[in-house]
Image 1 (cartoon, rainbow, N blue to C red):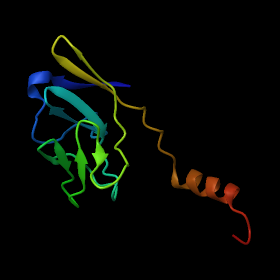
Image 2 (image 1 turned 180 degrees about the vertical axis):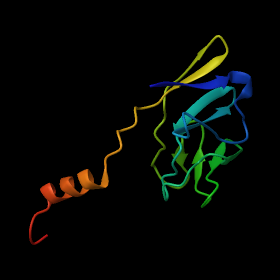
Image 3 (image 1 turned 90 degrees about the vertical axis):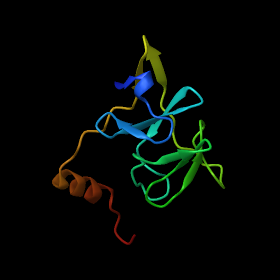
Image 4 (image 1 turned 135 degrees about the vertical axis):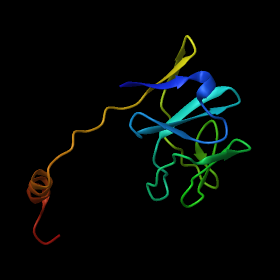
Length: 120
């Protein structure tokens, strides 16, 4: 699904801004807009509001750091998934995956029961 991130001039260079009902974050790095899921790889915390210093995104909760623009975690080879970004007439759009439909607790328990194997 394509989500508007707003005008290019409004996308910050010093912190992550959430888009798409909080599903993704965007930030400008050396003039390029990059977009990632709004979830840190450490403990699934939101990256929204994370600061960017010296091309490094810092998670606002536990201070995990990611080198930009690639989104590579500092100290390992894991990367934040990166979403495609397109700029049309000064407006930035991000292609984010469609959200999976929410399921009820009943359906979740039924799925678990179908997959359960005795003795495991």
